[in-house]
Image (tube, rainbow, N blue to C red; front, side, top):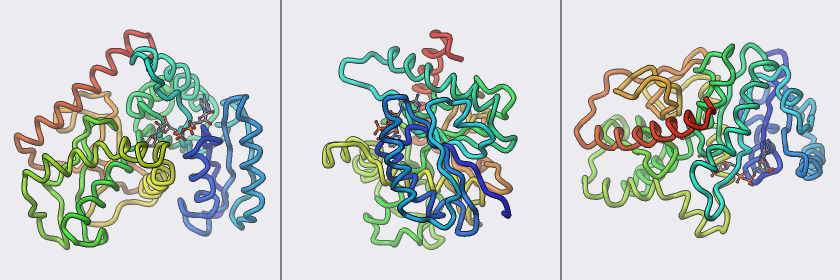
Length: 325
Ligand code: NAX
């Protein structure tokens, strides 16, 4: 890199934004040599809070941070941008029906997809963090017909990292010795954290299936709720960290012999219907994800993957019925 990278963060004044922006500006995403131009997109009522964050970014005097631009206009915020982190979304509030949630988010991710289509750089890569992340990514991609759908990802890296950490804790093996963890499906309670291919220092993981079914999977899938219960608000720093990990691996490649998890548009691999944004085991090279091919899928894995895919199909049917695709 000799020129700077323009990075747009939506929901910049929210709690994930507050954890994310400083790490991006410090070089955690693309290394210490890449100058960064930050674009913050927020709603009008949060512009002042975003200005406060820009002041704090100034006060860090990050050597790599060339500029910070704040806007409530998507066409300005995505203009010429190469990396878009779509964090801002409409959270589910008490009593809200799923259809209302999907409609509210369609109203955000449709126009943002359109603005990305019309104004972003040719090499744009988009990571959707805001929930329901998989379906929001599908909606954004549907509104960006000139951008390859593969450039729209949904984040399941936090689930992946949670799974690694739980396995390390249970086995006593350091995280650095673990490889080939997979999160399949939706970023939701139906996700399937899959240990069947996981390695500890190159050897297959040996754990009790009872632990997998009664402890491991529910702990990973329920971790978001456990954080809310303990902290009083949802995961923020760990979500920001996962977004950094995801974009770094996407742009710079995954480690030889290992893979990671990302929500990407399905082309039918492992029986996942084409067009769904689904989490798969993936490697990256040259800035493109590839689904890890030919993994054996046992009956337990099959039923868990199918369960989460059924939820993705439901969400797709619901947003299609609302005219959001
Ligand atoms: P906050 O409510 O703290 O922040 C959201 C921000 O988005 C607010 O400042 C709001 O003004 C802004 N916003 C809303 N609509 C916008 C729009 N149209 N354009 C620009 N900005 C907009 O939420 P936070 O805790 O930061 O979480 C953000 C999203 O991440 C939520 O949807 C949350 O559910 C999701 N998460 C996703 C995770 C994942 O692993 N994929 C994990 C963490 C998190 O739960």
